[in-house]
Image (cartoon, rainbow, N blue to C red; front, side, top):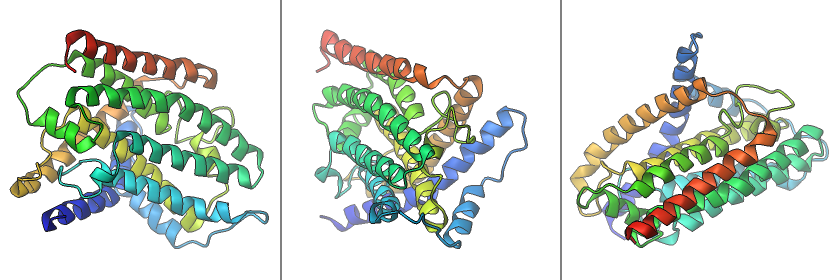
Length: 316
């Protein structure tokens, strides 16, 4: 383990912690602008986190230790997921310990804990949100795996760093399979991050909410950790999309000076991605919960088509 690798790893973690709330605020700001509404301040998520961390946590009378530990476990899972995704450099000491399959497993682990914690108190909203969350995860995780496998077939490895090194630092080539897989990934990202058309993070409507129903019983520092974890999840999915489909700008392990340019490149790509996400949410309508399985089944089908295109074109 080199000193440069440790520095790159610490930088990746620090960038994720600092930029995740900023990206959430950026998306919210552009979404408001595109809808001709008064846009919230860009730093509003930081103010919300500061306010929540300074408030007392109120727990339900029958809340178990699982309910108390879940926010810390979920936050840790999301932070670890961000740590193994090559955002600035491919020289990440934690990356060899986890590949694309383990990354999906981290998201699944966080989903299990937040669903169990929502059902722990025994409220109707928590149970409703947990059931919907598990439904979305049951359908979204296979589609995400197929998208990752589509890229791994090109690089012949499930390691994210190897995928980035293969796609970013080789001769320019056009992969039709990645185009199909990219559409599937966008659909999965919208569902996994509770965005329109699957969910609307700005409402608390009983018939539509998924993520908000899971965290209704939390307050104070526990709610702050969950909100921060949600921002980290959006940041992680954004970085996965950049690593798979726009990997240029990520520094190689033997190019330490490229780290100086990697951060501005990452910020620029995230800014463009945030605007596109806000535009997608603006032009989309919230679908009924019964249509979500069809939506995610389409994403899975597109990802499988990407795998078949890889095989037919001989890119494996």
